[in-house]
Image 1: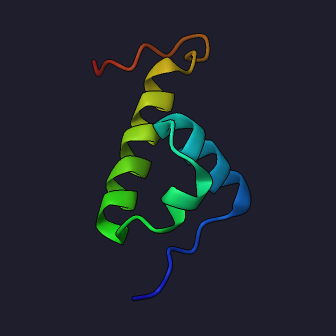
Image 2: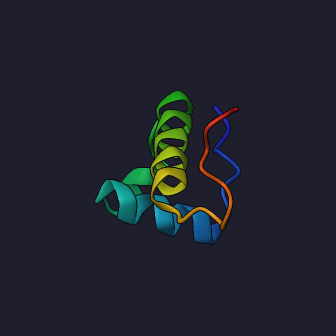
Length: 59
């Protein structure tokens, strides 16, 4: 099995988000790693402030 091609910054950020050591993150199965990356991205998108004029709702 190949390793996930993660940048060093992404790996550190994900390890901090999951509260696991970086070494454990490198040995996680790919499907779990992808799921956790998606969850982290969703959480960041929800917590990011929206620019003026954008509400996220459709008219």
